Length: 469
Ligand SMILES: [Mn+2]
Image 1: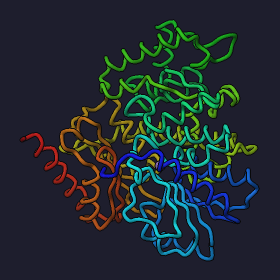
Image 2: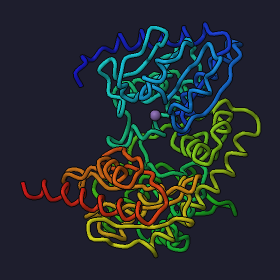
Image 3: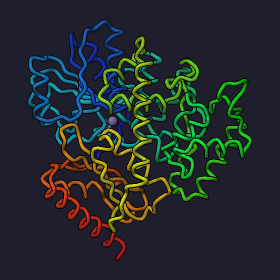
Image 4: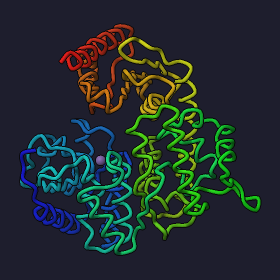
């Protein structure tokens, strides 16, 4: 990154963005559909609501020329977690715009567009700030607990704490400021989903990140695992959750699980991130997902993936009935992942340079990436090549997800390139990160064959060039 780090400049820009938003009369708030997009959009909505400013909200999955139709006749637009990558489109608008985003912008904004983006200040937008934590810095002067909470939830949703077992940089500053004001409680603990809301047996059974070989998806094995280690699962007829255990019991269980993971072939990189900082909101009801930042973000993620982003926003704003409704979406999301993993176990093929899972008509595109990643890390296959999975999207096109691990990336694998080139060869469009990427192609034999052939070719070159050096 060529820009020099300028935190002060970032804070000033953040405040200017907030001031501009709160001076608007009736803005349209556009936000992305993932947990970060929902959280950051909700921070903006919360601030507008608090000031009594009327506004409308709209979720956007993909931003292209067609999206511009949404903005017709709008005088004020706020973009959140989306837009900086499409600055060339936003620059065609006459409306007063604010963009809060952490993706690198291809071109600078025009004078009617105010952008608050960590990249412009030499701050890393993949590990140090997401859109929700950027929005936190915009609106933190309002001194509201909800703003801190949503900033942290969004950053967890974007997995910004994953590579290093806790937040760093300005994300870290956000949680520390929050802890000081008692908006959040920071604890070192096991980072498996379901710490507060799931009975212990299901907590283990539904652990897909990481996927514990022999335990995930197997209720009996999990109950047995806990009993063997003298972990109580019931008290006075009530199921116990992880947080019902004493600190000593939790510590013991965490180390037993890590030892088990090690014995069963989990990568060192996954084991390392199993314990780390977790963020708790003690003002939320006990045993509710809202009490734990990771669980809260998973709830939002499920809403977004199942076309219920607006419900996610209502959860963030603590609107009545929203949480209960979101829980049913989450249950369905988990059911789909579990069924998907079962299918992957039976149907994944080894095509030499990659694993291949054709799950069209079986696994929804909303969970195909999670299933591919979960199965890849399950310990049931050797992680010496990436996995590529097919599903159908809502238009019947073939949506492709690729997943790998850090070791393969270090050897030269770049799934973003695989998807870009494979997509091109098949008359589709693809891209993404080195470790996780995706692509959409037409559902025809020819396109399918062209994609698989190209993917094979590219992966071969990537992994061989480095190996030969
Ligand atoms: Mn984001």
